[in-house]
Image 1: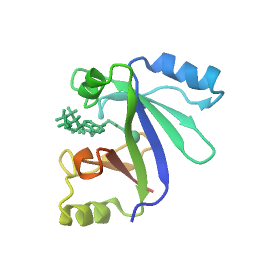
Image 2: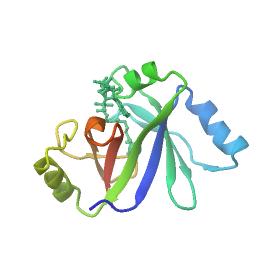
Image 3: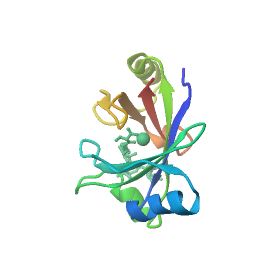
Image 4: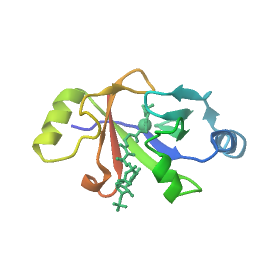
Length: 134
Ligand SMILES: CC[C@H](C(=O)O)C(=O)SCCNC(=O)CCNC(=O)[C@H](O)C(C)(C)COP(=O)(O)OP(=O)(O)OC[C@H]1O[C@@H](n2cnc3c(N)ncnc32)[C@H](O)[C@@H]1OP(=O)(O)O
Ligand SMILES: [Co+2]
């Protein structure tokens, strides 16, 4: 069911500083910041030859990553995103196994303009999993 690794997300307290590290220290291809108010984050994507890194920082008072950064003030790996061919079929199959789909259970449009869903970290070895429609 899951396909390509679309991105690995890192929550950061200072998006500009983190982007500069990837650009200037690691020599990476760093894209401009994207505000995603519907998701409560601002993101910066870093293009790698085989996948992407998504730097993210809270946007607004109700950001879902605020508590994560409170627990990890220096930042840390926040989630992994796998591509799926059919996100509704994947969701229904996962729900049937008892996996918890976060939020309303309905996909939202993510940073790439594709539908995304999130699965509870406690059901996947302590790792927050995002699914993105390929
Ligand atoms: C623009 C979209 C973009 C894209 O790629 O397209 C994005 O990726 S948007 C990314 C931001 N949005 C989300 O993360 C939505 C899904 N996340 C959530 O709903 C919450 O973050 C949630 C429910 C995973 C955690 O929320 P919160 O930390 O406030 O809740 P709890 O404190 O109750 O946490 C429960 C339990 O889970 C542990 N936890 C929390 N976050 C993570 C994480 N990222 N990875 C692993 N574990 C996590 C937390 O420590 C608690 O564990 P416990 O042992 O009970 O303390
Ligand atoms: Co993501």
